[in-house]
Amino acid sequence: MIRTNWAYKLEQYAALRYRKKILNRTKKSKIQSPPSYILWDCTRRCNLKCEHCGATKETYDRELSSEEIKKVISELRAMKTRMFSVTGGEPFMRKDVLDVLSFAHSQGLKTGIATNGFFIDKPMVKKIKEAGVDSIQISLDGLEKTHNTIRGDSQSFQRAIQALQYLQEIDLPVLSVATTITKNNFRELEKIWDLLVDLQVKIWRISVVMPIGRAEIKDQFLLDTSQMNHLFAFIEENSKPLEIRIAENLPYLAHYEERIRREPFLCPVGITACCIGVDGNVRGCPEQPDIPDFIEGNVLQNSIADIWQYGFKKYRCNETLFKDETCKHCVEKYRCFGGCYVMRIGNIHCIYNLI
Ligand SMILES: C[S@@+](CC[C@H](N)C(=O)[O-])C[C@H]1O[C@@H](n2cnc3c(N)ncnc32)[C@H](O)[C@@H]1O
Image 1 (spheres, rainbow, N blue to C red):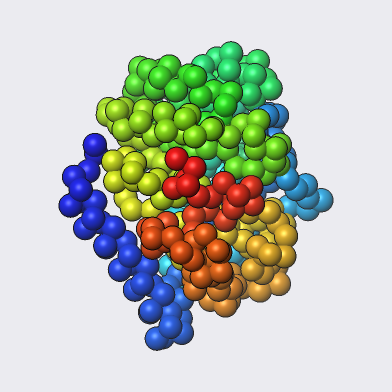
Image 2: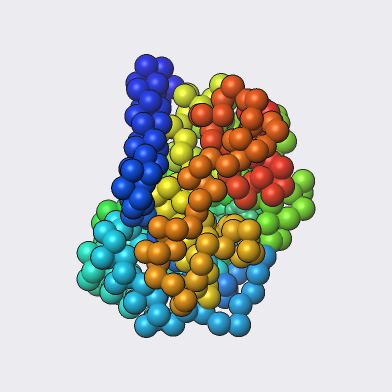
C-alpha cells in the first residue's frame, strides 16, 4: 500500500476542491484558468509499426509548420501555460522537433517528448540537452523478442535501451519508461520490472490499450478481468524502487484505487490540459479521434486562448456523469468523473464494473 487511507482521502478531497475551484473560478470571472499542459501531436509519420498503434486511426496531408506551432507557443507563454510536450507518430521523424522545443524552452515553458528512442544516439542526446528538454518518455513494450515483435522492427528494443542509457548520462529532470500492457506482453510484467530496476529507471508509466487505430478490435489486446486484477495487484506489490504511474486511461480503480494510485484520479482533458493535432485541430488528447465530436477549434483559424476559453464545455460540466445511464446512478461517480472518453468508444471506460 503506497498511501495510508486517510492520506489518500485528504488528497482526494483536495483534488475535488481543486476541480471545483477551477470550474467555479471560470463561472465567476468567466475566464477559464489556463491549460497547464499542452500536448502537440506533431506528426503521424513513424519508423515503427506497432501492432496496437492507436495513432494509425487518421492520416494527414499536412502538418503544422515550425512557424505555425511557434506562433501558438508564443500564445501559450502569454497564457502562462507551464508545459509543452510532443508525441506522434514518432516526433523525431520531424527534423525541426528540437528547434521547436528549444523555442518553447526559450519562452519559459517546460518541454517533453514521448518517443520510441530509435533515433536517440550520442549526437542527438547532445542536441536534446542543448534544447533544454525537461522530460523524456521512452516506450518499452516487453523484453527484446516481445518488444521487437510488437513494434515490428528487429532493432527497436536495443535502440530503446541504448537511448535510455545515453539519456541517463545527461541527468534530465524527468526520464521515464512507458509500457502499454496488452494480452501480448502481460506475461512479461515481472521481467520488464526486473529489467527497469537493473537499468536504474526511476519512473514507469503503465497504461492499457485503447480501442483505436490498430487496436480497434480491442478483444485481441485488452486484458480480461482476471488479468486486470493481476496487473493492479502487481502494481501494489512492486511500487518500489520503481515509481509506477498509472495512465489517465485507467480511471477509478475500485478497491485498488487507494492502494495503488499516487494521486486521486482526475482526467485533465479540458480542465488543465489539451492537445494540438497534426493539422492544428485542438481536441482533448491525441487518442481522441480527430472528428467533429472531439474537435474544439483549429489554431490556424482561432487563437488557442479563445479555443481554450470557449471550447471544452462538455468536460467542464461533467456531461457524461448526468447523461450516461450507468454513471448517472453510480455511487462512485465523483471519484472517476465518467472515466476516459477514448476508452468509452469501446465501452471499456468503467474499470469499476470490469473488475
Ligand atoms: C502513440 S506513441 C507516440 C510516441 C512514440 N512513437 C512512442 O512510441 O513512444 C506514445 C505511446 O502510446 C502508446 N500507444 C499507442 N497506441 C496505443 C493504444 N491503442 N492504446 C494505448 N496506448 C497506445 C505507445 O505504445 C506509446 O507508448
